[in-house]
Length: 111
Image (cartoon, rainbow, N blue to C red; front, side, top):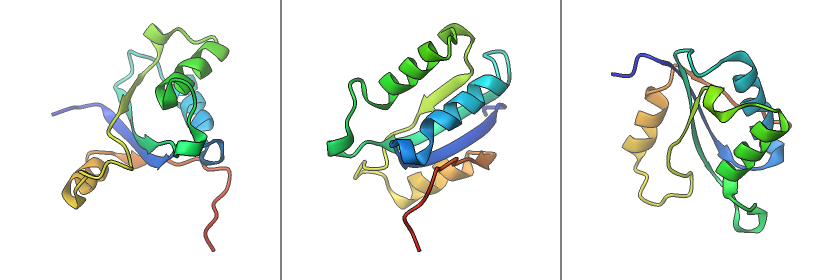
C-alpha cells in the first residue's frame, strides 16, 4: 500500500476551476522528499484544448514559478473525467484512495 498522504481532485481543466492555484499551493508547500501525492482526474473540453493538454499546462506553470521538476512533489494523472470506461466502482475507488479532496475553484455555475 502507498503510505503517502494523498490529495485527490477531479474537475474540468479550466482557469475557473483553479488548477493553477491548486498546483502552485501544492508545489509551494511540499517537495519531492515529502510523503505526499496529488492525484488528478481531469479533462479539457474540445473547445478549450491547450497545446500539451493539462500536463503541458502544469509543466509551463512550473517553469513560470521557477520550480525544478526534479524537486516537485509527485502529481499523478489518473484517467479522465470523460473516460467512458470509468465505472462507478473505479470512481469510488479513486475517491476512497485519497486522504482529502481538494478543489480551489474561482467560482461555480450551480445554483
